[in-house]
Length: 167
Image: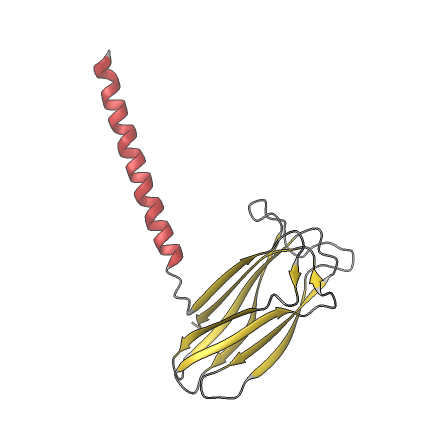
């Protein structure tokens, strides 16, 4: 009877190893997005304060186009239908520029425009904040901040920014 369990344990071990290999391959594929720069920020129950600007830099290549993509997770505590973001970009050896972007998150009725994500614990919105083509190679610096009327914006759970080469 003990010998009948040995093949079952052996198959279970092989299945577990195969599953682990598949999981590692999927994780490696998911992480190889080719981002020039990526940052994630989790916010406490207090929210996203105006002073909590996200700053960073990435090495840009001359003539290559980059896109700044954002994912923001809002909760039911978010009090507005829209969100404003202020983006400042300093391309290498070029003048700085600033852009103000507005995104509508909910209908007039208060209905969110995306479904609530159980895994994210809120309403994940994905959008493009900015794009640029640098004339010179070098460090491209940027800042992103919430630009609403409140000093601290409640109901923002998480933010992820990624500069990616445009396809």
